[in-house]
Length: 438
Ligand code: SAJ
Image (tube, rainbow, N blue to C red; front, side):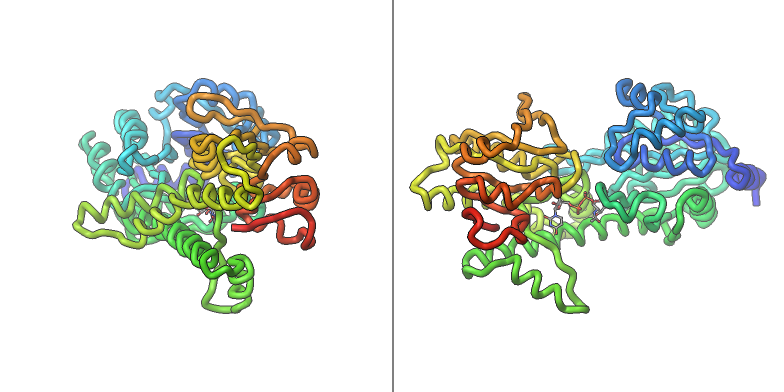
């Protein structure tokens, strides 16, 4: 065992290792909080002065990290945020948690990873552990990051350690958080895997080590592709049930009584969030470069991305019952967050539905108790108050996000008609209001 390994492992064991988390967003901030809670000194390296400033004031903009928890760690000095990359110079462990979006042509945009790796490579010193957490295609760690680090002349697995460990954050999940969600770790070499697993075992309950960084990258993509494909399947089942004049929600609920071999997914207005709509396309892009066409991923993406259009068609059909057209209709949208009980609107299908309704000439307002304002096509929309008047004034009320804060009985009783895209009204007694469901 080389001296540096002993040094790093000793530092990990006696909690003197200095940790830098690059990117304090939905992934980096919960990670930094758990590292600090475990008694390690952690610095968050940010590019946003506004974000760094609010974190150093103990203000969290992440639903799953309370400001009180954050402030306690900032006040006791175990967690600080900075814009200054010189914090990397004496770092022992660096976790890179930056966005991996898609470009306009649905290709991976790894520019954030590349921008993050550059200062890390410049600060690389013997004994340092570098872990990429951002969801990306198999091969990213070995093909993009490793060469930039080894350009220093140091050798991975001997002089420094390199690993991939994907985040598994389910925003709004009150049962599973960063600490108690099993964590996958894959290293470039066995020593890298061991050191990285030791790092995570300091502050996470369960670490699962796999054989390589590529394996770890693929595990994450399988998880999210599994969701995207199954959501695509159930959205197509909704389209089938519409044509068969069946209640898709009844069908799924009954199928879910099967105690084995079935896992319920539910139709909706489309796929939102910074992961599920995006990550599977990282995998299909990589496979295209290997002359393989990932049909399930592309098909699911096609079905899921068409759901907003389908919702608008259903609204048009519903208005038609009252001899109304979408043009000039007043439509009230309930919920712009991409899923219930959170405030995140990234990739939210609600925004697509609103845009499509506006293109067809409808006048659209929204209410979302978690989203006071939303930026749409360079203009700000404000959440309208939800009152009996606003409900009655709408020709149609559309439930796109089934926040638990809503009183669905009251909504159905006061709305002229309701389009329920989430089965949110399942407990509303029959006969209360006029309700259509996806
Ligand atoms: N959705 C459906 N039908 C379903 C489930 C979800 O339409 O049956 C929609 C949601 O409304 C949402 C989108 O799909 O718009 C994504 O929902 P999600 O909960 O699958 O995705 P995220 O991004 O909130 O969190 C997911 C994690 N969620 C779960 O495991 C339940 C997990 O897949 C990842 O850890 C995480 O993305 C990530 O960061 O990759």
